[in-house]
Image (cartoon, rainbow, N blue to C red; front, side, top):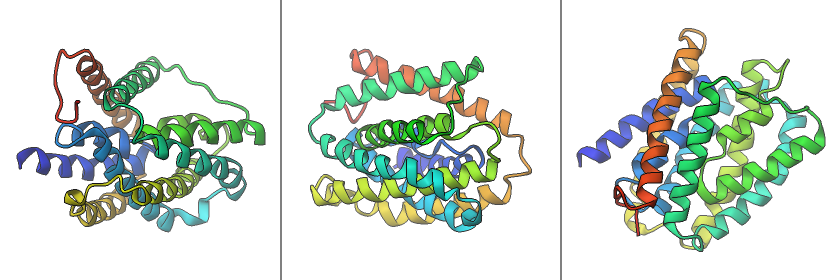
Length: 249
């Protein structure tokens, strides 16, 4: 019970962080929820949570959405998200955990070292980014950081970046959530999580957008990255059997 309450607290904080930094809702919550339930079930539930959070961000920042980028990036992302979601029931949980660990570790280390890549903002690059992001999000639920690497280009204001990223994320989350449900991937005993996550995502996102210009974003990002690094180490150790999670096996 304590771990479940802790997860909901972290989910609330993750919704705030995602509103400030443009990513973090899934990367902070999937690893913790995977300690409580099966990792595949965690990925599916966080798809709903992430979708709710993206929806509330879009509703508050819809005037800043870049339609061109949303279409070029979002359409291929939605298509490959369906493919990734379909493969969720095929890929072994341990492999998913290892992929999550490696992804989080690389992202955290590179970001802490201030190593960044800003690709050209043109249709071929946006389509390629959408294909990669959609597939990774559908399969392991963690595509926000990849999406950020493609969308956070020079000259794009933070509000535009967050609004556009949220619009794309919303489309991806709708596509993969429908795929998960149509395949019966979500167990009925976890349905009660969904309305709770709806309330948490609304309150966390509302609060996060309100304080968007008041908190020092660099500090928040570094705290998140350190947490992600520890989580990545945990998942990698789990894959090799050094530690054990509830979602293993």
